[in-house]
Image 1 (cartoon, rainbow, N blue to C red):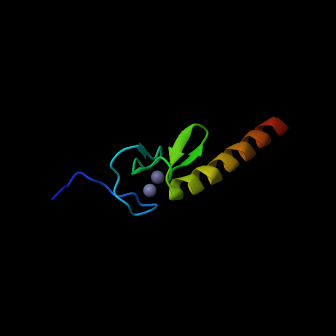
Image 2 (cartoon, helix red, strand yellow):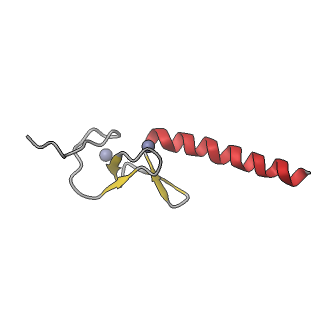
Length: 67
Ligand SMILES: [Zn+2]
Ligand SMILES: [Zn+2]
């Protein structure tokens, strides 16, 4: 039994080499399965969140500029 081998949550295949960690939740995913944004790797879920957050950030910036 190999306990330390993790599975990629995106494609469901075991991760042997070339794994990257999600910058947000720290889960291991294949390099090919990771979503890259702003120089960081994210899993599917966190990519969606990060996208939303960066949008909010931009909106907040705009708000402060308007003053
Ligand atoms: Zn994968
Ligand atoms: Zn994640």
